Image (cartoon, rainbow, N blue to C red; front, side, top):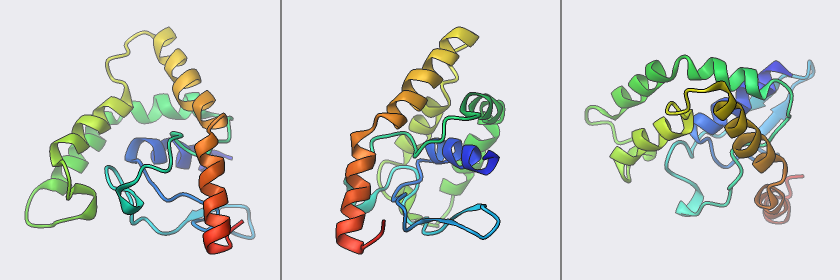
Length: 150
């Protein structure tokens, strides 16, 4: 369960895309294994935003996990900023380099300083919008019909 929660929060922060049942595997011990990290941060399949939910969700531990990763926000942002420096043209930075960091900061919600406001964001923006996302169901259906992935 803890690996699922960590995946959910990291997927939201780093905007891991193309998450469907063919790219999320489970081993014999029940560990969640992700494959295919071709779409990260600002890029998505065909530059189309199919996935509107913050992540595919298991509700347990989400609040605790988000608050813990938030404590490391500046370190994570710095790492992503360093990835933009130099001649490497990573797909995630091909379009709107400056927007990558701006959007990353927004996902951490660093402007929310009260616990009540942060809890409200986690409940409404992360948990409820993920649980109720029609787009996740549609994307899974698309993957099933186009790739045979259930």
